[in-house]
Image (cartoon, rainbow over all chains, first blue to last red; front, side, top):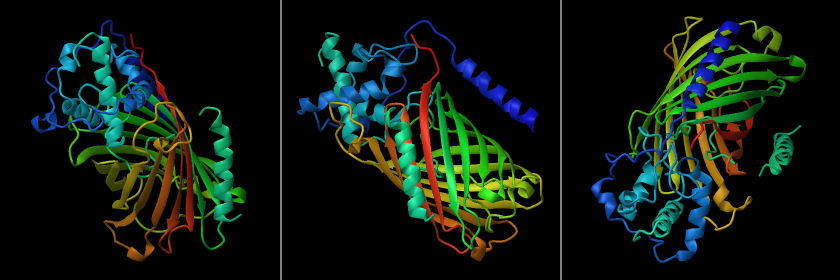
Length: 136
Length: 283
């Protein structure tokens, strides 16, 4: 039994080490990951609630910065959210992507959060556009 | 000690232990949903099941350690180490388990499937009851006797989970085969409903506010085996649960399962604490 336990521990260790691989540049956005057409037209119910942005910033800091970076400009594990390609997507598309996640790229889904909190995250992602000098 | 007094004591002691750290995303203990561990994250969890049996049998506590790793976005692997202590009946290390969960579909759907495969190397003294299969009550012989009987078991689960608004609904169907005995296949189930409290996130961080809490109810139990349904001998529990995200990386959760059948214990008190550790290096 000890041998089997040791073997399992070694497997786990190997997994840990392999996942700690290093890359050197910001992850590219997967252009093939597209929201279903019917999701694009969904409007953000918080669009006229600027007071909700701060809550979105807090959620982003808690759940997203590990991959997308503090400023949303991306890391080796998550793409830059300030780019024109991301900001050109509709609120509905961003909401769907935040909710669904993508198992292929490792983007976790956040459908367990209440819908309003996911819309707060969309608000915050939009605020990246302003800072990046793009038209939100 | 009564179930309620014991529950209060454990909650207070555990709560004090983590107050300075500052809760679990999911409040489930038995039911699995479709959310896998984030790629590159290691979750370290300690938890325990305390059982209050009927017929004056000794109360027991079965602690376990979980190391859960998100290998990829669609694959999570987990190692369990477990034990048991039952007062004068003794205590023991009861074995280990290695589980893997696979999510075959890329995006979220109305019904999300996860395939689960687990190998267990445990002995008959195991009482963590992370799943319940088959029929019959737990054996209550002295731990020293029970731990002499080892079992190699292979378990599969079909996990179906849905996000509906702020709610999660998950259904697990379990099949287990004891590779050490010719017992046929044993079956079990678990269903759970959970909900995040709160709606809008506050602008400032807070510890004891609704947005950090998840409430849930689980129903789980055994469904007999290929050798017999044994309806009267099955164990079933109904368990309200609560999860509290005490910080961005830590979660405290608790549940009380009420035994619904004669073969069930009177109650199962579960308490757990999770710590999420990003282990990959990003640039």
